[in-house]
Length: 80
Image (cartoon, rainbow, N blue to C red; front, side, top):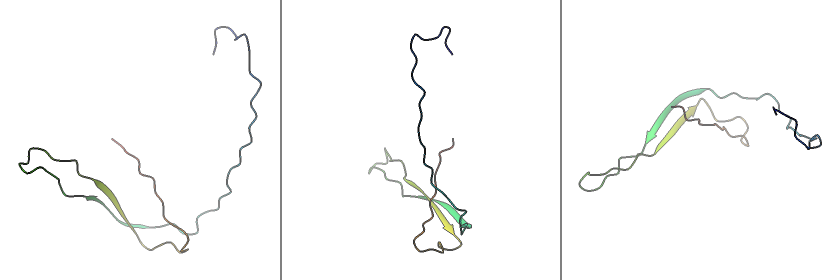
């Protein structure tokens, strides 16, 4: 919001947006197990310094996708 109107203005913007058509999923995976995998500690010979351990999330589902051309995908979000 301006205290006073600007001296010039732009023409209205018109844009076409194409969105993909989607269908409800044919299969919803059921999570049966989950875990956090940690690599071993890496340290120097006198244990004066260590590196941060690499971490990976491990997920197991009740079965693979029904369609062999499909894949499961997920988004990991950091929450502190």
